[in-house]
Length: 201
Image (cartoon, rainbow, N blue to C red; front, side, top):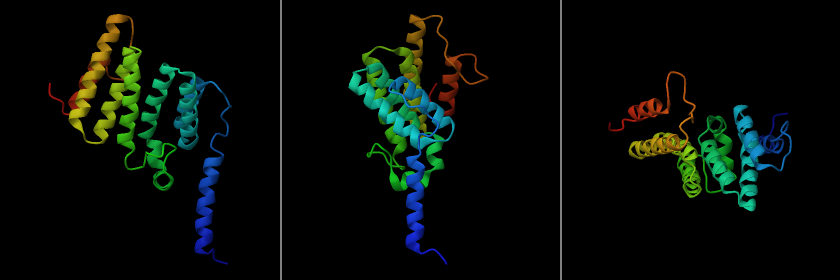
């Protein structure tokens, strides 16, 4: 017997529901939002964006309830990164149809929304005066701007990233930034990023 169109649609819906329901299999439950952020990175590394988003939202809620500005800034930054992660495009059909837990985000506007989350993280980073964190956030903003082909904004974000890098180094001369292989330091790396973005010298 051939399945009816209704049955096919039903299987599609229940299949997606099952995918989302058994989202956090293999991930230990915790009420520590910092540990949850670690779980998010693990899940994304293992191509499991659905439980990653759910746990990330839980962490944001816990940080908000606790009034933990530092944790909330890190979680906002993580959500911004999540929205442009390759895992999302791997499940484009699901995200196009179902959307995200943040109902203002769609598959098509996810890069712009990632910037909004980075801006939230940046605002808190400025408030609590964390230049090392701000260096990271502004770099991430630059990447998202490039994905939107907003090169001028990307260049500005890269400049801000380097500004905060210098501020952090002034405070902590021994501080080191992780950069991709082939680069001696963050200054060399960010200059390469700016060159590839077509930023003025």
